[in-house]
Length: 83
Image (cartoon, rainbow, N blue to C red):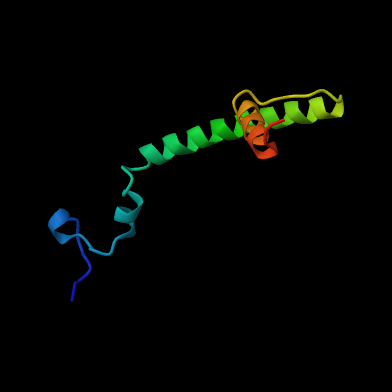
């Protein structure tokens, strides 16, 4: 059986069941920090488009989200068939 480490003698005597190693799997948090910042930016962009879409719907104006609106129109024209 593995004995827990008792001192700070270096990596040879580390506890193999340490939770600090599990936290450092992703490079100490760097990539996770970058991913969370990217996720936050995407969330803010989606929220802005949602607010713009709600405002335009309230004022009875047609509004297309720049990329997704055109894509949705293309799919709907295929779903409706030739006219």
